[in-house]
Image (tube, rainbow, N blue to C red; front, side):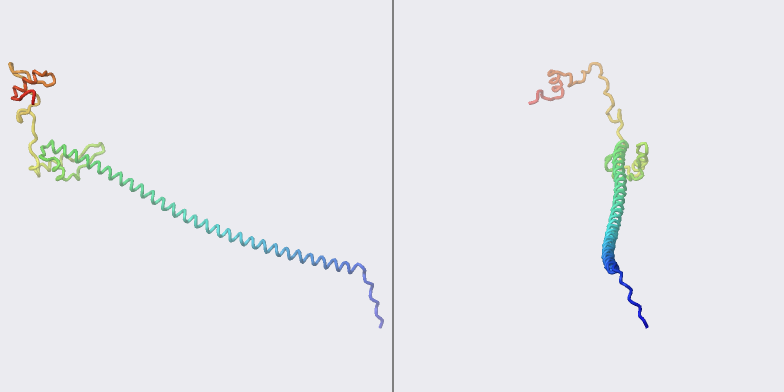
Length: 205
């Protein structure tokens, strides 16, 4: 059996093998660097996701806090408005009550009340109102009923004229009567004369 002689070795083959080994080493290094860069990018991505989730959670919390404060502010505003309306109503009711009491006192005086303040305290003014035109309504009926029910609180109102001895205007002087004394135009002599007529000493000591 004859053996074939070994083929001659190409002198370029060792260099190609060495170059291939170098290329393979370079590829491995580049692959390792790519993997490292990939890991770095993944880490940065994970940090970004964590940061995003943290910011989202913070935003959600701030949004919730803001909505809660807005709700509280709206409730406080509504309460303040309601309180202002109630305060306005209370102030108007107090002012109306004062006007009604004053009108009741004046009306009681006209009806001959002995003590108008007591009449105002005793009568029920709950049905008396102030109308849209600003006039007091229902007061005359209340005081008329009070006078009928509590006549002892009233007397007949005085009437000017002869019945009370207090005429509206003085009677004209009769012929021969001295002119009435006028302190505004009288001189010292007239004052002394008028004082003597009244039994007074002038000038006083």
